[in-house]
Image: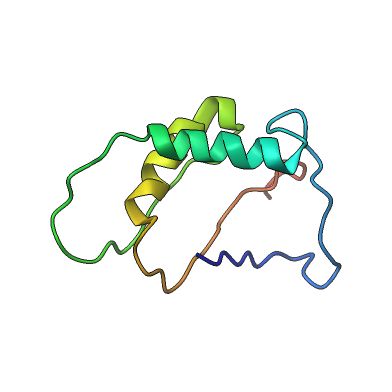
Length: 96
């Protein structure tokens, strides 16, 4: 699966992982293992046949939302994905 995020800072290079070590592990291997653990623990859900049109997935530290996010992502893990859209609020600037 390829995920593309369109953000106003696009073109400024890859942003450092600002919260590595606080909301998720700082070490890439440890982070990958944690995510795989959440995915492996996701309970299988029986879905009707057909195409999944959208997922709405929480955005928070993995300790808070990792199991819920993994349950959603597990639904599409082995399915073809055409488009990914990420919509997220600013955590540092208030909305007008």
